[in-house]
Amino acid sequence: MRYGLIAGNGQFPFLVIEGARRKGADLSVVAINEETDTRIDQEASDIRWVGIGQLGKMIAFFKERGVERVMMAGQVKHVQIFSGAMPDMRMVKMLWNLPRRNTDALIGGIAMELAKDGIELIDSTFFVGDHLASEGVMSKRRPSDLELENIEYGLQIAREIARLDLGQTIVVRGKACVAVEAMEGTDAAIKRAGELANGKLTVVKVAKPHQDMRFDVPVVGISTIETMIAAGATCLSISAGKTLIFDRQVMLSLADRHNICVIGSPIETFSGGEA
Image (cartoon, rainbow, N blue to C red; front, side, top):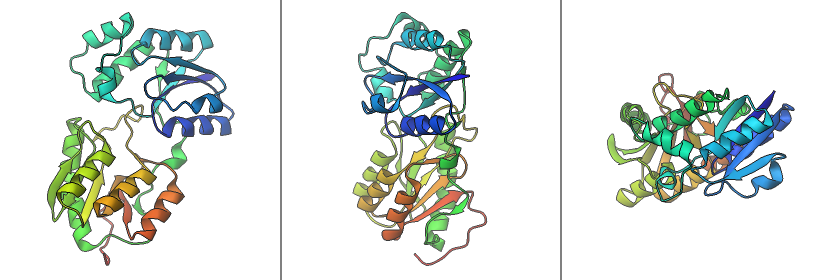
């Protein structure tokens, strides 16, 4: 079977290509002009570049290659979709019929368009399951009692905003919400929190209550920790089994060097430690 990949920005598409290669799977890649890293040309053996609104061209490429199952990997910023890019007629019709324009609706609409041509959108972690966060403490330092309280409070808020499809991250200090992620992304939300209340911040990033692993899977990596360091954040909580960790060993090593705790939710079995 030949698989397809719709590649957004960041490292995720490269992990999928690597994972498919390890498993000996044939992979045809659609890269987005406005988003995908151009280095992907050196990694993908079969690739087609399209504009962000060229849904018809994307589907035609997959059909031409005999692709039956497709993954989406990497973010495509909402602002790109509505920034003046010229969509083709298939994208226009899809957008016109959407009840709303949030992430779930947009990508769900693309999934339905793919299905019309016999192409199934599948779990984006299909080839990269080994990069998902494990449950429990992943760093050397365990969370302090205060950090556990921040996480418990943060999970309630973060899961609610994720349910509403507003974002997946909040930043907490002293059981008070300092910043809520919207369209700007996790790193930008952490940076904003640092500007508002630098120091002793806890970052809580969650999957949606019924996370669709086909798209919009939560992701953390080295840049997350670097942003936390600059903002004075001391603890990162992520959803176990639902969050991708890029460059896991390097990321955790960086966290350990800066005494940052990284844990995978749920947190019920965690006990506090020294901060």
